[in-house]
Amino acid sequence: MAKVVKFAPTSPTKFGYKKAVVKRGRKKINLEDFGQLNIFNQPSEAKVVSLKPNLPPFEMGLAFEDKGDIESALESYSKAIKDKDHVADAFCNIGIIHSEKGESSKAIDAFTQCLKNDPRHYEAHYNLANLFSEIGNLQLAKVHYEMSTTINPDFSNGYYNLGLVLAMNREIDEAIETFLKYKETAPMNEKANALDIIRSLSETLAK
Image (cartoon, rainbow, N blue to C red; front, side):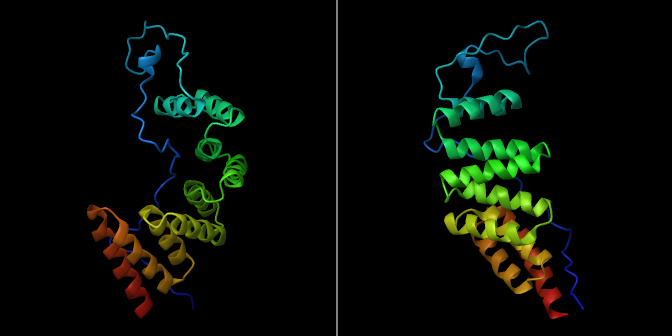
């Protein structure tokens, strides 16, 4: 008989998608610095100024996402791919947008294109694992979570989500080992949660 995995005190939820960002310490982009009024904080009569900043298209996509303008973000990321500007990162973020819109096939294609351009893109492996987990393909989710943590062993979210997948797949020993790795890399305020999960899994294993 299969063992029922019961978490305490509450059933944990996995961490969500991880967006690819510029990895060279550029400060947060403010569209208002480039002639775009913040349409979310301006009076209703305010007009949106034409946006023609001197920014690379990938960074423009990030800025549009920060403002909630998803369609413009998609256009900017597509332009980034065409211009060969952070191609893998652009595909990764396009995949997240499609995932959040429930467009799984388009999301998988975008993440796959990302990995074709950069096979060690850990965010894409992690996001693809999240997507496979959501659609119930735990085996592929496991593979890509493992890849994400292998490429970036300091990425605690990958260990956490991998641990959940292993627990759901009744691989309890492996799940405990993975949550121990999560505890080692997690922020201090998350370590107690990891211990609770490990305790629950240990109790399940003892039954």
